[in-house]
Image (cartoon, rainbow, N blue to C red; front, side, top):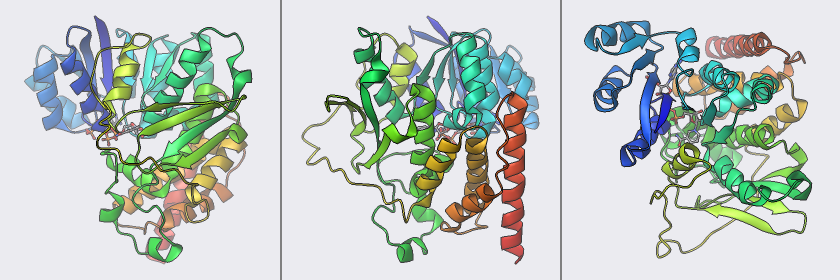
Length: 389
Ligand SMILES: NC(=O)c1ccc[n+]([C@@H]2O[C@H](COP(=O)([O-])OP(=O)(O)OC[C@H]3O[C@@H](n4cnc5c(N)ncnc54)[C@H](OP(=O)(O)O)[C@@H]3O)[C@@H](O)[C@H]2O)c1
């Protein structure tokens, strides 16, 4: 039985992870649950899964739960999140946004297996996260469906060959294209929040859904792929595939391509990450061949979806540039969700923030926090100027 710390348990990935645990209770014990402030959801999860520790980022929610569940240790704060990983075998980082960084670093530093959904920590913290990963030779098993697909394509191949990276021509990361695929600049100028929140193939939390609509999600995933698999940006391509059946592909030097396919269901990559290196019997995402009439592929529109271009640029720049990109994006998405800016303002705001990038190195953890703070500050100033002016 593996002990699990599920951080971000009340969200889309968190609740789907609990579906997987519910389906195979003999394999997993939920030791730690963590969330922000969703007290009703976590109350139900505590009752069902009986964790020993619960962490809420919202202090008042933690206080209420502490009084209610006397047999459970209820804590709050970043230190508690970091310490929570120590007693577990697998840490699932399903927190949304930059707030997931301390968990990623703590899990790797403690030598735990990290099932990573929180891509933002890997993107913003790149060089620092890599150091923590190398230090203890910790494993990151990606939960993101595209990276799970790449991991699966690469893993079977790598096991019996000494120099796998020399055989890879390119990684091909698929993108659904989001709700605005094929839209012209004029149409994009008028899109609403409601439309942006309607993803055609995946049901996800609001932040990643908006990221999918701008293609920033794909941009972040390009950086994630570079960080996870050590492949240069020039060898990572995006192909739009609206059906979201082919989750990503690896092309080898002999032009042979290996792909991973399933219906869009995050419980499949979650099952893979929790059981790796074994495979567990499960039906999540099992392909219904009678429902698939076609698989289409097309090139992404880099001109109208500027976020993708910005992500490649920040990734190539390296050091703290991806932290700036991530912070600017988080502020812009939050402002869009709050009705402060338009959808089309998101990429322009990020580009403006990146114009002020100061090229500082990412040597220590605090360099990442400082970069994040500086970029957020500039982004917020730009939004205030926009709202007031
Ligand atoms: N959803 C998907 O299908 C999908 C697919 C691939 C990758 N991902 C990635 O997975 C991550 C989670 O996405 P999601 O869609 O599951 O997001 P979500 O539905 O918005 O859930 C976010 C979770 O994080 C918790 N949280 C927020 N701030 C926190 C903090 N400071 N400390 C502890 N917990 C905190 C939330 O708690 P409250 O409920 O209390 O706010 C919630 O449990 C993101 O990085 C996303 O890019 C998601």
